[in-house]
Image 1 (cartoon, rainbow, N blue to C red):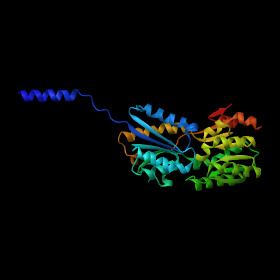
Image 2 (image 1 turned 120 degrees about the horizontal axis):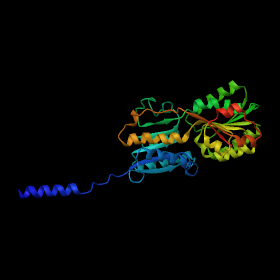
Image 3 (image 1 turned 120 degrees about the vertical axis):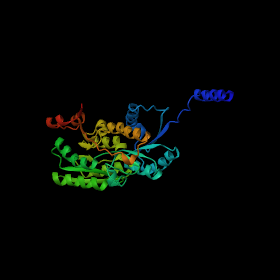
Image 4 (image 1 turned 180 degrees about the vertical axis):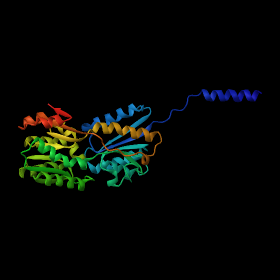
Length: 322
């Protein structure tokens, strides 16, 4: 009887001990951009995590790595993240996804604002990815055909258009095909410049200026997004109506943007991270495509370059920057 009392007392004491706190899950963040320019993307993702009840510091730790627009840095940054043994990686865009997948082939990856993963070979299908990659894809190939149309709607007198394209973009061939189709349909003269590194941007723009282009289409590129201030400043100095797929270009002074609402993409990425941290397999989570595209017009820029935007286009805009 005494030994039974001792056993029960020991069991009660053991139960009274505080449970050992579970170590917070490590979420890796690998982004092609720079923290200085793109911290709002991280903030949107964190807001999404908080909405799902995850507390940063006590439940999740976010290990950030930013490439600052330097594609050559991505492999090393991915290896640094691999050493942290993350439970899941949030990678944007496709260049970051590729580096993360190579460094951590057995780690779940949530892609954000990346090209079609079926085309790039990271998923078997959108509905059933089947591997370690899931998340959100953009629709930049389809959107690219609309860029010239919208630029000409805003500035119908343009006849000679410059295009800058990212030679490192995984979807480059499809993007170029889409751009050339739009040029043929609109009957304008086009000049194309390939750019793969930051130091190639100004020489390429200078060649377009020498070719006397009248407007500029900035094709989808994480490099261009990181270097958007330089590009927009050059375009404004030459009074070029300019369009891109990212709203942040228009906020910097470009005339137009048409593409996905990027912050909502990063907030939505938290949904995938939440599912994976709770045990879901990335290969079972369908990859989403955006359902809403936004048109943003910078009317202040239009006035600065002497352009009068027609009311029909203004009414179509989701936002007009005055």
